Image (cartoon, rainbow over all chains, first blue to last red):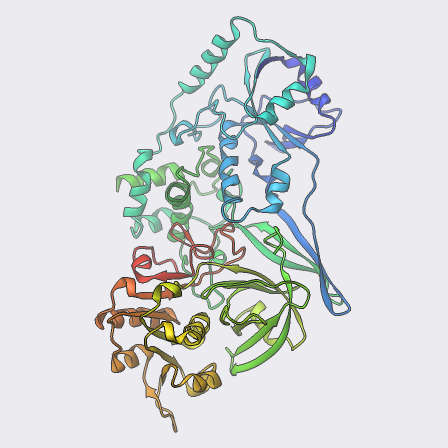
Length: 343
Length: 274
């Protein structure tokens, strides 16, 4: 399904989704981030990319698995599976869209994660193609994506100046467009050519190459024990921002949080965790299989460009560039991969 | 089992045996499931045990799958959760989810000699396989166990080891000379070389401290065991047990789902991230 949506009628479409939680980018505190669309919100889709990717809407930073309490000496568990309203996220950039099917894979495999999927099944991603790169660190095309990639999105919008071209990618996306009714118009004769022109122009912007993508996995495997890793990681301060902001990093911790020690009540909680922390892999004995900075940088890069390829046939990096742009000490995954590939 | 992999079943501690004493004492727990079905498991698999309010730990299931009444776990006092287990009493309730991980391919080993080589608490992950092989003794050739601990007081499953003599050739060792000690004095790999079990038509299973495993494998190879005849289990820090939380990987493998059991033929090509 392909439609045209005049920019001044975007709000009309959003208003028709009154049973949904609708989120759109908003500029606050010097960054774009997703915020709930309220009655008075003026939706502004001139954003670069949001500081957080949309993974949080299926995989929140903190998630209670169940509450526990003691009743007559016996533990009683109350699962807290989420039951969210349908959630529509507008303005998702295609790099982040491509992140979601990768997360879907992780949270499926042999064991389907019920908490992730309770949210994910009610999540609709409305993408917005990038007409130009937002930063020198945008490398979507270098990792097999595109500024107008559809993978992972339910709807892809393309900015045509005073109007959006809106394409339903999935059945869920088609239904969402249908709910906009008269807000949408049919395509005019010149529209398909105009969309193609905009997409081609966006794709023509040069991007930093991620080495020879097809040979990166082999290069990492071959240089697994290279001193390069420690050298490239030497200035890492282990803050973990690279993974927290990554659209595909999914590692987590599970802990018990006690609310009332006298009554044995509390919650078992999942929180985001981070492969850049020494604690992440340290055994209780103190032994740590990834005890130095180099092995932890290697883990992050190898997970994206080697292990995920071995296990699932595709890179786990979708080229959003956040881990490069936001690293306080300038560690650059593209440069790391490049150096390992050339070593 | 429910579809919610994170929701434990409630287990009840039916029995506690004090195996060894000291700062890193070992206790063995028998856990029953009074209000749920429990679960079936295979030799080598693990379960995520928890004490509510303290947290979860992945522990290998030490009982044989042939034992249906309870699951057995031997736990060394190490950190927050394992210490909470050591403070627990018979009748206390715990959380149990699982089973997780792969298995020892016992069925493939029928007709062969089995050489178990363990050190310290490393006897526990092999114990279910050893018990099963003994119970189905007619299916296997000679079963031997080389087991060592730092001192005689650190030997676990003492009564069981005495009971097994005969069905199993038990070769015990302690690290240093000790008054009254009748077994071998020295490290486990040395005891193995001293007795030199035949590698012909045999499978070796080893579990224990990493340094012991390293030398046991060296010695097994010197005794003629091929990489495919040597099995071990590895452990890493785990949180989810279902291949998602991201920390227990050795290269591309999550130990919680692909492991913990590996043949040396498989393991030698993986990075040493364990």
